[in-house]
Image 1 (cartoon, rainbow, N blue to C red):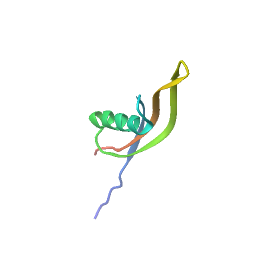
Image 2: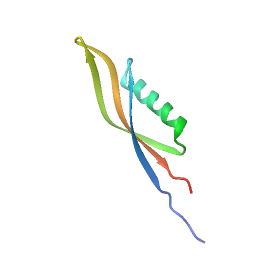
Image 3: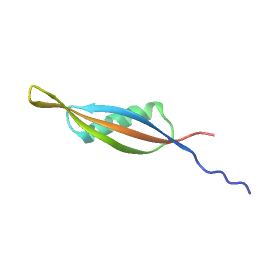
Length: 71
């Protein structure tokens, strides 16, 4: 009986939201899901704020999207 392991890859994306970091993660995940198949996980690699005129105007996240490569 021959068994094969799985091989995964990561890709990095940046997403933003005017509401929150959590919303930025959801926006990034939904967009990545339209293009990538087999997503098995996400890692928030970075969080940043965009500031204009002394106010936070956008929450930005850098996501590592983990997905399994197809055979």
